[in-house]
Figure 1 (cartoon, one colour):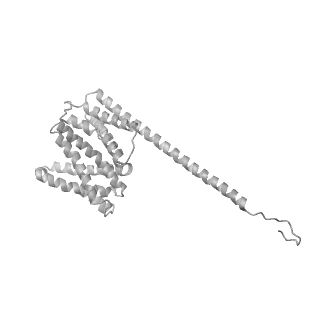
Figure 2 (cartoon, rainbow, N blue to C red):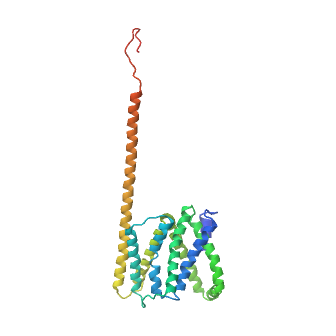
Figure 3 (cartoon, rainbow, N blue to C red):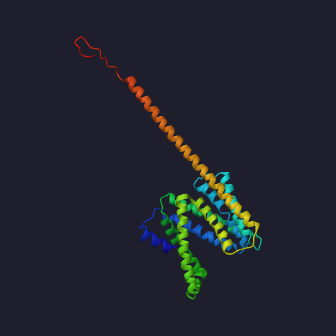
Length: 299
C-alpha cells in the first residue's frame, strides 16, 4: 500500500509535501492496527458469530463519534435506519451460523475496542481532509506509519520471517498477494475519496452496504439452503437504505427551498431599497421653475 500510494502521488498526481503535521498520523495508525488486531485477538475468547455481530454494528458508533468530533446532528430516524441496516447484516450472517454467539467478558471488551477504533478512524481522516490534506497524502503517510509499526511487531512475533519463507516456496501465494494488494489499494483509494467528499459516516455506510452485497454475491455464487433469515436481513438492509435515501432527498429538497426563499427575500429587499432610494432622491431634488422672468430668462 505504501509503495502504490507513493508511485501514484509522486509520478501520477505530481504531488509533494504535506498539509497535516506528522503528529496527526500516529492516531490513524493506532486505529487502523487496533481495528484488525483487537478483533483477531478477541477470537481467542469469543467465536466468529459474536465477532460478526459486533463488527456489523460499527455504523452506529461511527455516527456517535461524528457527533462528538464534527458536531454533526443525526435524527432519530437516521439512527433507526442505521440500526435496521446493522440488524439486517447480522440476520444475513446468522443464516450460516453453525454455532450460537458466545459471550466472554475479555472477548467482548476486545471486539468492542476494535469497533471503537473503526469508528474513530474515518472521522479522524475526515478531519485531516477538512484541514486541506489530499487523499494521497493521508493514504501515503498512514501506510508509511503502519508499515513501520507492523514490520516491528511481526518481526518480534516471528510472523514476518514465517510468511517470507512460506511465500518464497509458494509462487501462487505470491501472485495472490500481489493481486490482492492492487485490488485492496483501489478499494482503499475509493473509500478515502468517499470520506473526503461525503464524510466518514457515509463512507462507513457504503462499507456496510458492501458487506451486504458480498453476502448476496456469496449466496448467488455458492447456493445455500433457503432461510427466512436471508429474507428478513435483506428487508432490513434495503428498508433502512430506502428510508435513509428518501430522508436525504427530502432534506436536500427543503434546503433548496430555504435557499430559494432567502434569495427571493434578498432580491425583494434590494428592490424595496431601490424604490425607497428613488423616492428619497425625488423628494430631495430641488424644483426648477421655468417661468419666464421679466427679461425673458427662466428662473
